Length: 456
Image (cartoon, rainbow, N blue to C red):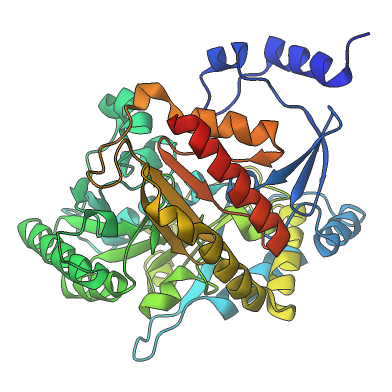
């Protein structure tokens, strides 16, 4: 008889087209059917268990099937499954918005307040909302020359056309370039690109000078600057100094452009503070949230913005100033209820305190790899860590992309019960917050062995 996991894999490959995948790869990379999950672990139909070292694409913030979130969802399903949010409302959407406004970043001396919440379905949709709101705001204010957006080199903001337009990862962007808006890309403050003898803050200051020059050249044309604060995740887990954020906020104010903070991947404690913006002591004009917002249970995103932005749209209908953007499942009660439960855990339990201990454990385990001849960089921000593979650590010469060294690490991980999904030559870790020190040890040990296998 055919084993259940073999049968399920065959049925899948006969009908399902998977995301971010060259399906031909599954002619030699096994498809892995998952039967269940709990905490940091996935349970396969093959009877094996797999440590989810990437939080299932960075969503399962607190681990799989957190009891408080599961209980909230079961209760909500007995009350209200869905209702459109145009002309109707419900308690979970209200309660979630109130809590997001309460915990949103604030900064001394900055009167900005993120007091309005617009819901969407996923991270890319949140970026689309922020782009459209910024552009439409300036139009409502009579500034029709403002049609450009500024993004960092190496940035990733999503894969719908608007979000992809402000993404600078050729693997995703190049094919569709003819369909995209042309943003203005400015060099990233990525510490990896620091000049010899230049520390992270000096690198950030130099890059701020280049941003200033760009904003001067395009004065009056720019709607907003987008940034993934502290960590450019899908672009290779590139990290920069928090000082860049303060300088960026000042430049946006000086040149009267919006600042869009994409905290879809880095929000809710991932970088060591509840929001990454807090480490730069800034308040953005738009804050985009998703992924961990519902604890990895249901799709939901939120865009927080200021009362000043909201006021520019608040007018008689005949003015044409309304923001007529919608999604069928906007503010879905189940998703909002899961998010309320997730934020309650973050508020009522010492999650961030535990994360600091876990991050220190991860740093200690990664430290010996700094001398590895094929690891050019070991970098970490909170509960995000990455290893940059290279043919030579000293010269940083990369392995050719076609050699797919990261795929070798991925396959080794699965063989040894750890889900690792490298970004090219970057092996990274974004574990759920429920991971234990022993599980961190296992995660790093398997990744280290996988790297040895990949570089041999």
